[in-house]
Every structure is written in C-alpha cells, then in structure tokens.
View 1 (cartoon, helix red, strand yellow):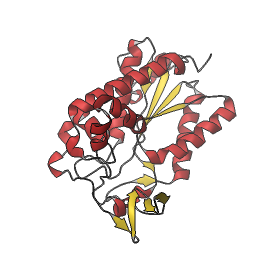
View 2 (cartoon, helix red, strand yellow; view 1 turned 60 degrees about the vertical axis):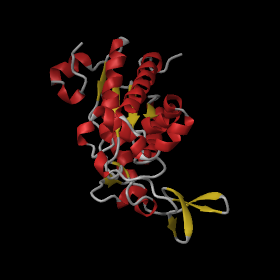
View 3 (cartoon, rainbow, N blue to C red; view 1 turned 90 degrees about the vertical axis):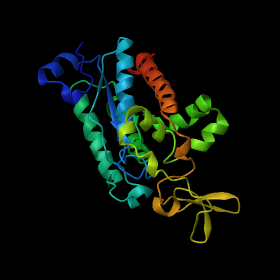
View 4 (tube, helix red, strand yellow; view 1 turned 180 degrees about the vertical axis):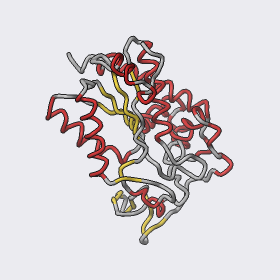
Length: 269
C-alpha cells in the first residue's frame, strides 16, 4: 500500500494499482464563508484535516482509504452576505456532487464516505445519495462533522462548558482550527457573540430565525443581520487546541470505526 493518502497525489499508475474495489474514498466538503473575525473562511480546511486523520486510522484498521480533493465551496444559504465568501447554488452543488460520484462509480469505486463541514451542503448530499441508491444501489453515507461535534463537546467539556463555546464562529470549528492550523487563526481579532440582537422589530433567535411569542420562526434573513461578526451562540474565547485535539480524536475514532464496520463491507449484513 502506498503511503499517499490524497488521491490528487497518486500517479495514474498508482491509481490503477491502489484504487480498486476494496478502496474507500473519503470526500471532504465545506464552504468559504464568515467563520468569525478570527478564523479562516474555509471550513473545508478542517474537514480535510479530519478526513486525512480518519484515513490514517482506517488504514491502521487494514482498510485502504484515500481522500479526494475537498469541495471548497458550499451550497448557498444565508451566508451569502459574507464578504469575500464564495457559494454555489444548490442545483450546481447537486450536479457537481452527482458528477463526482458518477466518476468514481464508473471505475468501481463505490465505497464512499462524505466528510461534510457545512450545513448548506446537507440538502444536496441527501438528494444525490438518495438518487444513486435508487439508480444502482450505491449506498453513500455522510458525516456532518460539526453537527456530530456539538454532542461530543458535551461529553468532552461537560454540558455547561460546552454551551459557552458551542456555536457558529466558536466551537467546534475554532478549537479544531487551533489544533490543526493555529498559525492562520487570529485570536486577537475574536469577537464575542452578539446579545439582544433584533431584526424587523423582533428578537433574533439565530441564523435565519426570530422569536415570536416563545416560538422560533424561520425567516429569509441574511447571516450578517443575525451575526455581523460571524459569531452566534458560542464564544471563541472558550475554544482551545486541547479541546480541538480531544474532539478530533473522537471524530477520527467514529469515522475509522464506521469505515471498518460498514463502509468497507459495502454496508453488507
């Protein structure tokens, strides 16, 4: 087995030798949007780092695992207001993901796990993976890293401490960044989440949501209206590299175990 983890680094002959029916392909996805004034906009950076560690751990379990180039642009949602952000429409993302899975399937590479780092990608992922299952029985699962992480943070930090750091612009992504790529974070620029935010005469309840009579109501609001500094809910001041390592260790264990027990077998049994 080659030491190379990234598909992009394989030569064509290495690809023919190693990308066979036993190979598992990880597909990292993310976005380029406001992650807080302190954090790099590309959350796909974190998704790729976690995917590479999952691949290493899966290989240690005897499963030949490779990481495809990350999809850096997320499906468009309320983060279109991010200065410098790049998002693609849901139909475009759906078509892109469909073509990627089709290219892999053409060569018999059907053991695929999506490593997702952006909520705006979930709709396209669900649509495309459902379509491929109907088309040829290919079963592609997806790990939405940050959604999983919110629950893991409660285990790692305890519910009270996790509540202080968990949220957009805070954890999990800030701690993940402090663990994997601390040199490109600017913690000196961090901002606390806003308090008492109002829009259209109502209290803001989160990204694209307001409160009315105790109810959370979804509205067509831009992220900048709810969180002008990209931070909502969690304060990045409570993030740390130690939390990032503990979190990545748990994500990697889950991912590698899922690959060993289910993806590598083609979800048989």
